[in-house]
Image 1: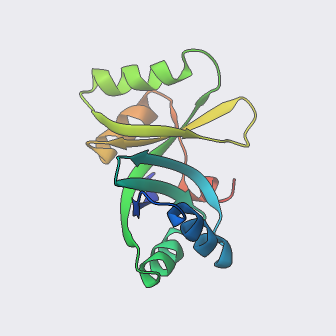
Image 2: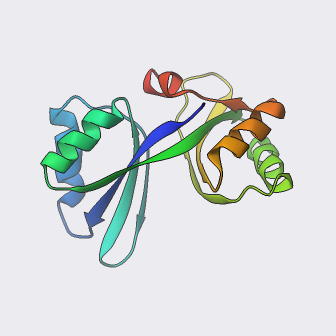
Length: 144
C-alpha cells in the first residue's frame, strides 16, 4: 500500500517553539521532506513528512512534545494547470472526502507532489491507481 507516515506535532503558539523543534530535528539528522502548519491564537499543528518518521517520533517524544503518526497518501501529478483538478475530480466521483492536503517540493522534472489526508486511504489509493494517477511510495519521498 502507498501509505506515508506523517508526523503531527502540537505546538504552543509562542516564540521559539518552532525553532526548538527544528533544532531537535537538525541535531538528530532528520530531513524534512514536506511540512504544513495550521494555527490558532494559542497553538498550532505542525505536520511533517520526514526521512525517518519513527526516529522523529521518538526524539520528539523524548523532548516532551505531543506527537502522533498519521497515515497519508502522496500523489505525483503533472505540474501544469489542471493537474490537481484531475485528482480532486477522481476522488469526488468516488465519494472520497479530502480532510486536508498540502503540496511539497518535488525533484522530479515536470511533477508536482501533494500530500492527501482522506477519509479512506485504501479506497483512495485504489481509485487513484485505476485512474493512472501516480501514488508515491515512502521510499520515493524519503529519498527525494
